[in-house]
Image (cartoon, rainbow, N blue to C red; front, side, top):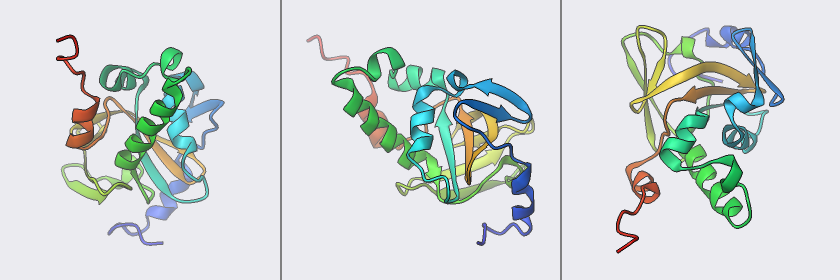
Amino acid sequence: MAICCYSGIKRYEHLLPDISLGSTSIHGEVFRREEIGKFAEMMIEMLPEDLAFTIFVPSVKAFDRELKLQVNDSLVGDNVNNTYAILSRILGFSAVPRTLSSIMVPFGEEISYDSLSGLTLYISKSSDGKLLVNRVESERLDLKKGKIVIHIMDGVIMDAEFEQSVQPDYNEGD
């Protein structure tokens, strides 16, 4: 399997900690499932573990701040189907069908990959080692579940049309 133009990248894959969704290991530290969030967990579970993917999932705060998704009401009653539809759209924007750990992104350069939905993801690395994907900064990097590499982001990666559709309608009360 060829990965972009980087030779020898496969040798680093074993350095990424593998996670279970019961507890998550990040750079040797263990985090509870609640810290990656139910919505991120649901997105990760939509992908097959035996195929190489990289997914840039929003943090719990980003889901709430930008999509107004909260576990207590978004996964209850009639909201469940709408929530799954939103998560599957976000998955399409934020997943690429290849392994992309943070060590594969060179400092000072921008690389790009098409997401599953066709949205181009522009990826760079800041001097502090954080990834920047379409102007969204990473919070945690290099989690792994099976062949899936997971990066937790402080925002939601989406195209302009979908972003417009999830913005609040300020004219609703008129």
